[in-house]
Length: 500
Image 1 (tube, rainbow, N blue to C red):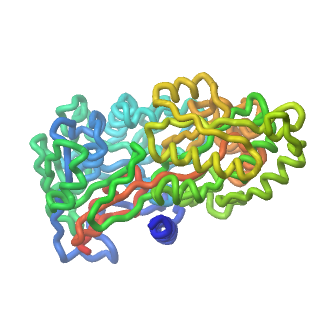
Image 2 (image 1 turned 90 degrees about the vertical axis):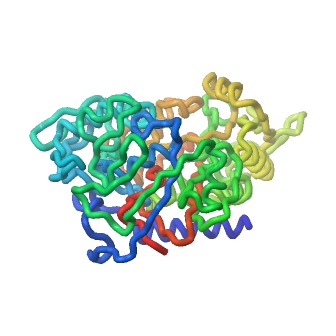
Image 3 (image 1 turned 90 degrees about the horizontal axis):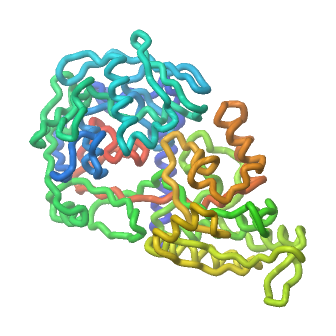
């Protein structure tokens, strides 16, 4: 079963890369038009039932649940939508110009469902509302401000951000319509959502095959799978964020998210202060085993910190995902780790290879990953044990740097920014004097190519990327959802859904 799940993941990634290539932002695909596919209006009407939580808001800037937040795809559109290869496709944006810390986005001609034209003032209102929200605010933290310039919006950043347009995925709404949690914003999507949960046609748009959308109230998130299996809803997404795999009896597709699971290393002291030792850890770590076994196939191994489907990272020089204990042992031998101390640990005379993998034991996937990593490192000559602690203790230990190795997970932005590892929360334990830190800053500023940064990463190895976690999209047999969008966009483009 594990091999089958991994094969499904690999096949799905290949499919995404084939059909969702890396396109330019100015000439990317335009969503929300009146036709789909070959330009013909779909003939087979589709009715879709989607879940929502009554206790949560329909306003995407206030919604807490992923399900309610995802409903904004029905009635709102963003400036850009990010496809499954993490390339931005224009929606309400016509073009983007600039670089460094200043970008200008020119708007297309578009209309809200109430017949009002979309203006730069609406985009600025939406941006400010998004920046003040918990969900979108984290993504836009590096964007300082937005101001109107005719039919364009000028965004000012605090520091350079690679692939900035990938962050412009917040819903654009009519100004003044999203101020409170009870408000349902006015957008430009294919449908209109009312406060009582009724979904009607947007008179300004021609819909795709989906003609009717019914919202079904769910009282408990644990009952989503049941609601799908008995036919009450047509779509459910399981992210497995708690570290537990749940089987759903329905048509399903694994979707690799941009949640990077990694092995953190404390490079500020001891054996791990050596780049050679950290590189040996990299080659000894069996990333394939972590993805296929520890994560039960609900992950895709990676040799670099970038998402395996990330179009701009295709063709880069990479290390490897399978364990190479011979190479790891050879590297250790070359830097003097070729004898044992009195306790039986490999030493170079100053440091030993005795280490501990710290892990949040409340997450089953990560706990299994910790033991898998310990086994593969021990096979190469390390002496590694696992220390499982509760989530509170784990977070405190990481924040204080009280670890040698640890299993971590970071949800990256859709622009694949690695800033959490270079100055952010995940940078604890990384020596700021490492050349790779300066290399990332140069890459973010546009002064260094992605290929050169990848080489710098492999040379210094500040942490070991293990895999990208996957979720499971499950849906009714008579339905074919849109999977052309990146995983953050749960429903993708509703106008592209068809009958199967």
